[in-house]
Length: 205
Ligand SMILES: Nc1ncnc2c1ncn2[C@@H]1O[C@H](COP(=O)(O)OP(=O)(O)OP(=O)(O)O)[C@@H](O)[C@H]1O
Image 1 (cartoon, rainbow, N blue to C red):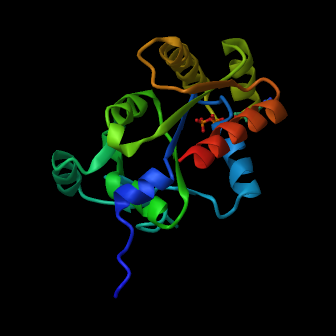
Image 2: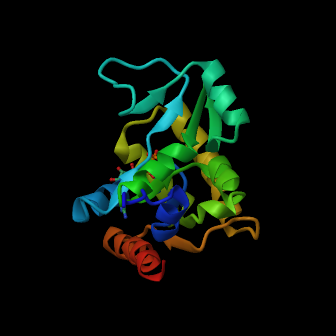
């Protein structure tokens, strides 16, 4: 008898997606890079959709699924996204299929998502996502890290700090879906806490 492919629902139930959010500069990339380094086969990022044009070197299906605006909106209307956002006149979104694809590959899907996306995913209980918020120790320390990262303009830093206030207030509010808030004070300690939270979910599912 042919072996049936595991259904997407079964794959997602066995490997619940992890949504990690937090202000820009909180240390999400730093911690995720370390996690992927320690467990090269356990986790995966979903490939997002975008309506922006590919940049030199970007490959369709690798950095993004590059689609026309009409195709994006059709998929959105059909309920094909777990979250969507608009930046600079372009649409971005994480498709249901992209999240399922990671789970079907036997990996836990890690979603690095901003606050509005978190709210959208929290409305999809069947996705069974687990939510973690990474917080900087303070807005003052966040400012220091953003400056020493030296990737953002002064204007971008001002905007990121204002947005950080909003995100941190949301994380502490009753409206937020986060099961865990990790304060990234000492990197070793924060990494250990994130790692424990993520691995715990695997044991329980
Ligand atoms: N515990 C820590 N102590 C000191 N510096 C840290 C710590 N964690 C991260 N950093 C530094 O803070 C800066 C911001 O970290 P990172 O780029 O990982 O943030 P991010 O949350 O991924 O931001 P974005 O959402 O903008 O991509 C980096 O320069 C990083 O090296």
